[in-house]
Image (cartoon, rainbow, N blue to C red; front, side, top):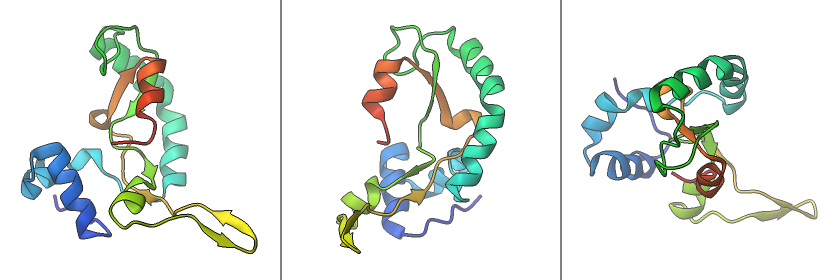
Length: 134
């Protein structure tokens, strides 16, 4: 299934990160990780699905953090975040700007899905350390 990134550099970034640069493999093996719909819609869906998803992840991981593999995990972490402004900052070199006397954040892009493949169980320390990074 083809993935429709707004910026070509974003597709290359994720292909490099997940597949060693193979963009075709990104679209076939990792297509469930991505959902480009509005992050607000995805967050609403996530809130409804969260209890069921947590039970699936607890069973899959045996209750152990899937990042550090040591600590008991109780939090759901999106591998590809639902939304982030990190690529706008790093790839497009965008910076916060003053608008009407207030500092306006760099706009976010919507990437990650709520698909179980894009979720992992995390302990609080690992989840906070990762935050909105990929």
